[in-house]
Structures are given as structure tokens and as C-alpha cells.
Image (tube, rainbow, N blue to C red):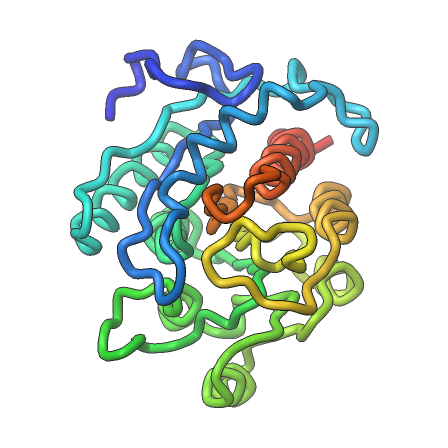
Length: 292
């Protein structure tokens, strides 16, 4: 993908036309080749862009406007359907280029496995990297039904890559017993059920560190986000997730990139999931890019 070519399809609202002048790059990772339940998240990025036209450009939470941040929408990375490894390689190469250009990457999934190559690219750029992970699921499996490339494995992969003690998971309410045991035995923090309050406790300990944030939309209760591949009851509210994004914005950590994954529009005729996702992305842009 070339950055000097304008994306011909829909773009996120107020996207800046010039890559070189932009501080952040929005991009889609339309892959759902390894899902274990319901496919469809490959259509998430395009639908999030489409519904973003309904957003207000001003955030009363942060007292910032989308005009305050220059971001370029690079479109979706063209991925070979069904070829997981090749897709992951393409995503990692793309992320490497974004980091090399000194831009802030904001990815839209796609299944959660797409976060793994971006986090790996971030670790190459930032040796002292920490990960903040918000999700309903642990994603700490080594494999799913014999397949190591699965949306059930990305957090295990990055934990083994940078060390489990550098990965912090919040909102977790589903996973195998062995996954929870592995995290405990290896010093990885898993905060069950809640996000905001345990996150507030951890943020001071990460002050000054480069942090990548990955958010699976299913951290929200299905009442707030039914349009996802693996719904799981008992999640947090959209209000708590917004407050968590703002808590990060007001902290002293150095957010160097982020993603929002697992929006599957076909399962939500009301489109509340895609609309919620677009608002979350607005707050991530305004709160984490060139933090005030």
C-alpha cells in the first residue's frame, strides 16, 4: 500500500488528505479467517468509516475537536482471503512502515489475531513496550483445535514475545482455566470483569513507558455491542469504556498506537456496535494522539 495514493473508498470523518502532514494513520485489517464462532468482522472497518459521518466532530469529554488532530485514513490493507500467515506478514510490514514514519497507528479489525503483528512491530520500535488489553476473553491459548494462528491466541503470543509481566488485561470474563493459571504463574495481570477502576490503579505504574492499547469490542456487554463474533454476557457499559479511554488520556503513559477489533456489522441491524466503535475511535484519536 502506497501512502501517496488517496484512498478511493469511504474514509473516517475529517480524515486529512495528506499522509506526510498527518500525525496518525487510520487503517483497516479486514481479516476473519480464523474465527471460532461467527465470521463477519472483516466488514467492520468499512462500516465504522461509513457510520462515522454521524459523529459530532467535538468531544465534550476532552474539549477537543477532530480538527485538532491530523490523521490520514489509509484504507484497508488488501489481504489474501483465507491465507492467515500471509495476511499477518502484510499487516506487520504495513505497521513497520507506519512506525518508521513516526506516525501513530490506529487499526480497525477484523478479528483479534490482526493485533499480533502490529504489537510485534511496536515491540521492534519500542523495546520497553507494555500492552493494555481490554477484552471479554483471555486470548491466551497456544492454539485452537490444533491451529496456532487463531483469534484466541494473540495475547499469548505478545506475552511470550515481550514478557507476560508487560501485558495487562482488563474486563476479562471468559477463557479456559489453564489460561488464567498460566497468567497467574507467569506474573501477568488479568483483571476480571471490570476495566476502569483496576486500570486507574495500574496507570501510574506505567508512567513514561511506551504503551500499545488493544480493545476488543466484546469487552462491552452484548446489550451495548451485539455486533461481534463471540458475544459474552456480563460485560462493561459503553460509558465505562469511554471513561477508561479518557483515564488513559489523562495519565502519564506514552500511548504509541492502538486498535479496535471484532466489530461484525451483520449481527447488529441497529448498527449501534459500529456507531459505538466510531465514537470510541474519535475519543482515542483526540485523547491519545499528541496528548495534552
